[in-house]
Image (cartoon, rainbow, N blue to C red):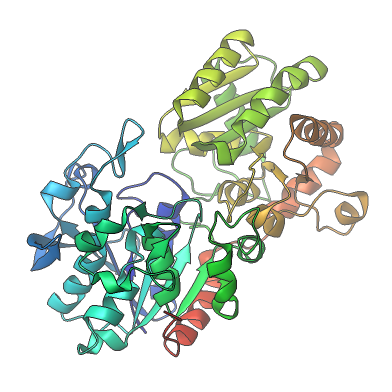
Length: 488
């Protein structure tokens, strides 16, 4: 099948979170299964700095806000597979320091920037003469592909292509004033509650949900959760209307990138048959953090600094954990300035127990996942989560909240599940410091039994979370999407 994958970011070219890891890995898995994917994304300033060997494949013209914006289509290749990637170059939109914002403040023209991505992707596919049978969009930034195809390309062969929209995080919805219908170039008669209008504004994500043939999220539990007021972010009614076409597919991990047996960021690699490299990884991480006490349990967290990720829950729990246990903790992340300030204060209050690093550091992320004993994921909600999957692969036991994809991917360590070889980590239900504290203490009780702890590690390391299984699920959805036209 010929599939055009359209997204605002993809590893290793541009990344702010797990979306990029997914988009960078899925095309390679599809290619290995014998299909023809192409990836289309913006040519950001950060991509330009990579000095990739690119060739101009085409030039495109995209109407935005009543004016024609010109762009170039630059062709490259995804590392590790003969799979093309096409970058949309438009300097006025993408030659900026950030992907979506500047110092935490969204760019005011994001609606125009990602309307250009969505319609530009369709124009790029036409220009390179790629007979796409399906467009696979990711989150609100590319959600307009589906309504564009239906409303503006009905007489074009591409207008018959199937559409699948993957929602990685429903809390980001691409909401703009109603007058931005003129920006995206869709007739204002479509600004109504059955199409683009959302609580008095324009929502690009809502339009994508209603016009796409099939919609999915990145775990079965999250697919059900977002149909409820608690997790629906105001869009639960829209999603309930699409219940028959709403699916959950758990993300995979790219084991060519995340694999302790061949990780180039580790000084000593390891695997289920020889864990000595993990001991070396912990030793190296302790030195990096300035910690002593190699026998003390070490918890790690690699995350966006966002309310969703439960950093305030962790910050409130850490003083009690430091008082009751010998736990040490290292956190890597970037995001909310208020969360950053609270973590800095905690690190100053507990030197030698808490180390905090800010920014996007791929090398340090791998070292933390490999070197820690525990991986903390106390999210308030989690569509899927990749950190816990990486942790399982690396023998780092996850401690997670019982929600979304965390619920679907981590089996709680009860005596019976451990004895049956099914347990892979620890879960807690309530989004409170007390529940997290109790769960970590429960994990540390088992940590004192090296044989039981090793058995738990190996349970996780021997599971298969590779992308091939997830890609096969997506192929089933592609087939379904080609038969559906959405509900708008």
